[in-house]
Image (cartoon, rainbow, N blue to C red; front, side, top):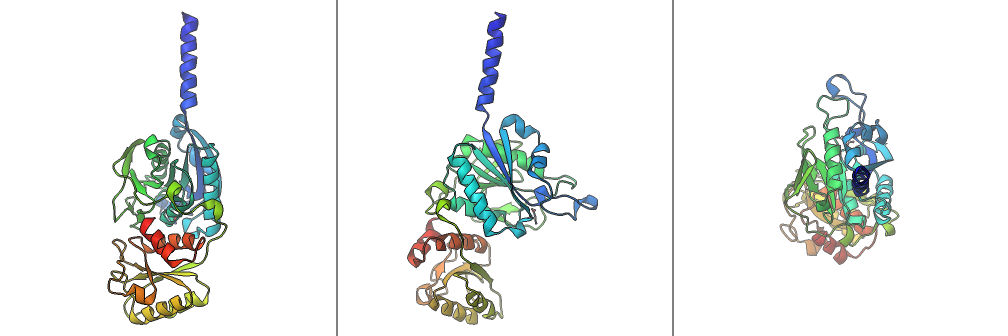
Length: 347
Ligand code: ASP
C-alpha cells in the first residue's frame, strides 16, 4: 500500500514537472533592468541589471515555468537599433521553431517597446506567445512595478489562450496587441494604451483573461519572414506643424531615405511647402506615406490631399512610429507601391 502511494506521488510529481512550460526570457535592457537610483529612485540608469538578477528577483516564476534567460543587449530602449531588432527576431524565431521554447518574454525599455513589438509581430513566424514587458519604475525605486509585470508577462506567455494572438505587450495588469499599443504618458505606470481598439485582455496577479483578439495579419500569417531579412532600409519620420518648412523632407531625401512617413496635421495634412517637397521626393523614387501626428484614427486616402495625384500612400490608422516599422519591413522585400499600400491595409 505504502509503495503504491509512493509511486502515485512520484508519478504525480513527474506529470507536474513534465507539464511545466519552458519560457525564455530575452533581456534587452530598459528601466526594468535599471538601477543605481538616487533618492526615491527618480534618477537612474537603464540597462544595468542582468537577466539572471531580473529572474532571481521574481522567484515565483520558477515555480510555474522552466525559465531560461538570455541577454540580447542591455540598453535603454531609446538606443534600440536595427541590429538588436534583427538579432532578437532571429533568436525568437529559432527558439520557437525548434520547440525549445513554449513562449518568449522580452524585457525591454518602454520608450520604444511598441516599435520592437510591432517589428516582431510582422516578422516572427510562430503561433506561440511572445510578450514584451518593462517597467516605468526602476528596481531601486519605491513601488517598483517590474517584478509584478514580469510575473504577469510569464503567465501570459505560458497561457494557452495567448496562442495565435501575435506579439503582446504586458504592463500594469493589461494585455495589448503589438499593432495597437502605444506609450501615452512619460512617467505614469498607466501609460500603455491602444487608442484605436482598446486592450485585448487583463492579467491580475497571473490570472490571464482575454476579451478580444487582433484581426490584422501578424506572425504566422504575416507577409514577412525574418529568415529572409538581413538588413532594413532607412525610413524617416517628418513631424509637421504650422508655419513649417520643407528642409527636413529635403534633408531626408538627400541623405538616402528610401521611405518617408509624414506625420501630418489632423487627417495627415502637410503644410503647403512640405507637400511640394514630398511630391518631389516621390518623383525621386522615395516612398512617401501620409500619416498623422494626432495619435489615433485613420489617415484617410484622398481626404484633403489628392494622394493619387501626388503618388502618396496612406498608413491606415498606424501611428507614425509603427508606420515606419511596417514601411521598413515592406521595403526590405519590395518596392512595389501597390503591394506596400496593401500591406498597410492588411497588417
Ligand atoms: N528610457 C527607458 C527605456 O526605454 C524608459 C523605460 O524603460 O521605462 O529604456
